[in-house]
Length: 272
Image (tube, rainbow, N blue to C red; front, side, top):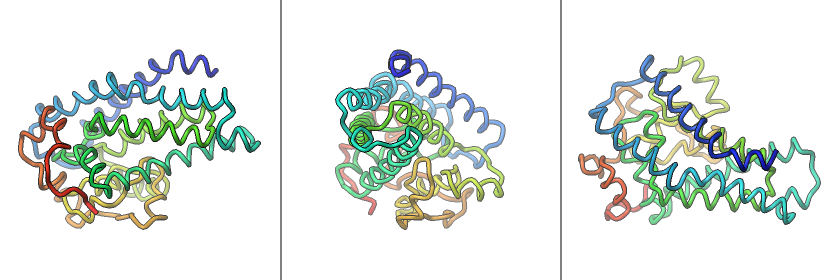
């Protein structure tokens, strides 16, 4: 099983990645949540460029950074679950929760540490919010996230199946959370008790600093409630809220070159 996952992981990851894009894009077209404020064509060209830049140059390697770490830990008997006997189902469940918690903590650090914020803020410079926003990450941040994920996998001695499931869940959750798709308010209230919904995560992309510094969770929404970073709704409402960062609204910051150069711009270094 492990050999199969390692050998065919790239194809499976690409299938899930681009399959999720197709499903969420269709949902947005059928039931959009809010009107977009910038020209769709130019914005999509820029954001979707990172669907190629990151997967082909960086993100295509990230699952194998984590998978390779899981294989290495198993071969050398490194990590918690290779030292402490535990049922397989428990090791998988704990690994999934721990990896999601690690992403939450990493996300908070990306906002708090000035140098890390420079890498991360490119994601927040989008002046609109749809599934393409989920693709808008600086390659340097993607590399950092991959290295941190690999370190957590090794420390846990996470089972290979848990790592593969985590990658799949994260991709699906990122596309869902960034969707400009309408969710019935009753379903949203129920879903956000456990999962990050589009209305919940959209608050995190607000131009208001207090709202930018909230709702850091990726998959499980409970981390924000547990650590006091939960904001239920944007102050201006979802239809009227301003998306993005006030410092980076010019067209040059929405082009691929401007996004790649964003860490070099000297503005407010931290959002906390």
